[in-house]
Length: 356
Image (cartoon, rainbow, N blue to C red; front, side, top):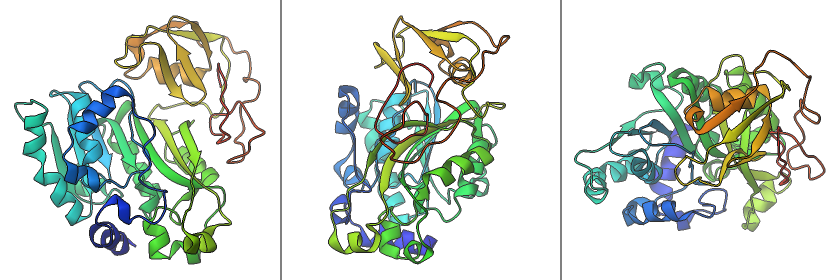
């Protein structure tokens, strides 16, 4: 499958307009600071973008970031601006044509960003085999990926390698495509469906279980939306399956519990993260207003207290007294079920306050 994907993204696709569905290439609304960052990206780099949602975690200044499946480098060059000259971004991709474009414009972007030296690099390699690139354990603060992991034939190795190279308290923050049921093998083998980020998509519940097996307990859904397949031929083949573009964040924190447990804790956001003065969104179900006490479970507390977000919150309570599970939490609900609420991994389009 590696060769088919290389050919599709290196030779078949020459720009985003060559895609046959909207599974890839779907930016959500950009805030002004990201529009400004995007405006500085060379047009050739931007035109070869095939992602399914701009990956944009908060608090990036000075971070070391790894982009899995970096393609032409668009997201890397945006992140290069957000981490600043003292941060660092490494892009990994297996497609020569894409890497040629990414490397071609390193000096161009260094000058446009006003940096004295590049804070970005690209390596050819496979996201399943980061060890072959001699990437050290615990060496990155954040890993991002944009509509690429679904293209991997060995998603378990991707997540295990991501866990290995992340620092404790780090996270993988990524957009990808998921299905509401398992995709039949005969469709997985279709090179166009696979290249269009459809037939390689994981069934959402298989993804959640796999993430936990690889050490990422309590995956958090950040945002999601259903995908439209505006192509009659592809719709005929795969129209019985619903697909979603979704962004998840997975924290490397040992000992996270399997459910949202109530210890009577709360946090107050100080409003001190750049571009997030009034609200901090940990995930789809935790939108924390500045200056307001926000009840949290033990896992959410740790996601804020044991990560790069610690200095931006005030913490109340501890984990000495247990009050049981939060009502409505503790089970994974059907992907796309519009009648369900209060779950971190429910793709219902509904949201809640508090935990969870």
